[in-house]
Amino acid sequence: KTRSQFTGCSFGGAAIWQYESLKSRVQSYFDDVKADWLEKIRPQKQGDLRKQVNQWWNSLSDGQKTVTGIIAANALVFCCWRVPSLQRSMLKYFTSDPSSKALCWPMLLSTFSHYSLFHMGANMYVLWSFSSSIVNMMGKEQFMALYLSAGVISTFVSYVSKTAMGRFGPSLGASGAIMAVLAAVCTKMPEAKLAIIFLPMYTFTAGNALKAIVALDTAGLILGWRFFDHAAHLGGALFGIWYIIYGHELIWKNREPLVKMWHDFRSRGPGAGGNGSI
Image (cartoon, rainbow, N blue to C red; front, side):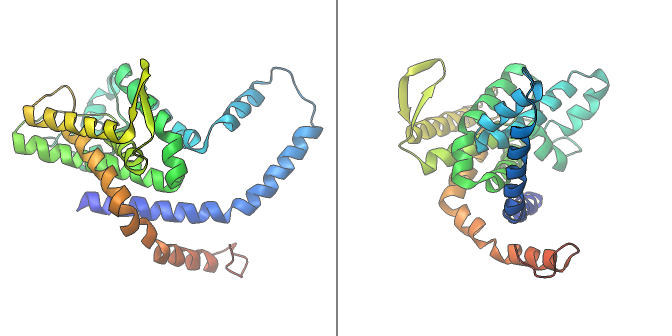
């Protein structure tokens, strides 16, 4: 029930976020024009750090900009693991374990938690690599709803698997959510060519890569491999596949009543201008 409520809230929030984004585009356009004009008349400083940061930021794709916040959150949590006084809280809220007293918050927070630098680096690299494709395909709002929902759902699948097999223990990491992103892109674009970073000369289709990953995690779950949380990986991948085939039609395309309700609420609120127009 909790995971269903969270998923509903995630996609509902994403629909409202998209509405607000569209509503602000006209104002943003005029703000950008004004900023460009001021940039032209303002004296330029050589080696201006702020200008270099802005140039770097503007060079990123929409997907890369979107996941930068996720990567920053993961980096912050990684640093928190290094603070001795926080260890108890980190173990309670930032690792998922069905035998723990805290069950709900860790389903989400463990998605942003990594203890190993290599684990975090590998996950964030994959997320960064697929960020442009997934955001171009869904938009940043729908992507964020998918990512957060996948994190919770993959953790729930991990809970069920650990309880069923009697193998309790903490898990953490963004792998379940990232598997949903990877599976969604591979399902939508099965003929796209992929390569491994260390072996760029060998390419394979996205569809075959997804089949191999699902097969590997299925084998790991059945054979009891414990190096990875294979149940969480499978939960995330299956959710990503389901969302592309069925979920987008069932959830995202039926968001209009909620958006209309929000539009009516905003139109009645202060600062609406009295005309209720976007």
